[in-house]
Length: 414
Image 1: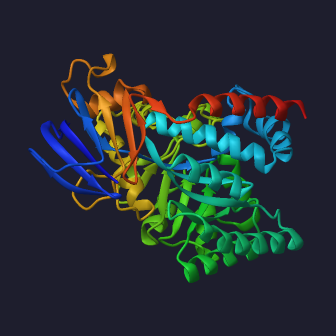
Image 2 (image 1 turned 60 degrees about the horizontal axis):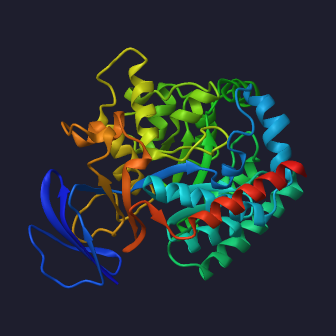
């Protein structure tokens, strides 16, 4: 499969981009090579696609289901009871809806933690995007549950080999307050042995820190270091309530951070100490649709930048830094050969409609994308050298919307 994109704006210059198989083969002023698929890039800009560093894809089924609530009431009264009823079929259609939404708004890779691994994996495989998927690991300090979770993760690790390389296995110990020391240590050992990611929630709320201090006489990141879990394969979601010492520990061990500003604001969780975290690889995520309520990474960039500026410094997190969090930083966090449009990189890229009202006038494309636009400005989404959306049309879109709505309705009735 080959694609030629003609006369597209790339870094403010007119270029042709030639894609062969799943890589960007050539970028030049004019390319006359024949291709299986030709795209007119006039009035469009090519940018790297987005990496959603932390989400729970199937929670699209809960969009608008439980809003404006205290976080513990939200979890205990609404979210957890509904999740207990979810089947693999529910997760499949919820994830398929999520994949559709991500394709429509320019995301080609997401990092997921949820139940029913294969429901999400099938949705990823069928829609053509990429994902790191973890089967959420919660043992609640019960030995039997710990053994069950370990056994399940070993099984899924073997089963993931039946999928394409766009489905990446990850470990998903939920957090240090829902997972025993034994299981966390096992996850680190398994991660080291098999070179897989550990995707974990850390320091998301003040209560989490207070409880950890009460139980362990140390803060969450300090505790994870003490038991030997920290390392460069750890992706820590949130990491809001961290002090200077913990930030130094995160830097020392090369831990990657997934920042989720919309979810953090909606649940009144707190603010990432961004300026103190310079030097860490900070990627951007949306979290799940029950606490966001969408998967639009363009919108997420705006919230990330504005939330930092609201702390009193209008120069912090400029648009270019927010854009890097959503692209190249995410690629680095997951060891992906993407996040930039360069020869030899994976052909994961977007064509942005420069005639979109939110991108007019065109003083500065990145500023417009971060502060003005939303996912609807994405005209074309290409992942792994395949066109997943062109002229904002995605295969099977109507069926996915109809089926996901039906599944969500049935789920809330159970």
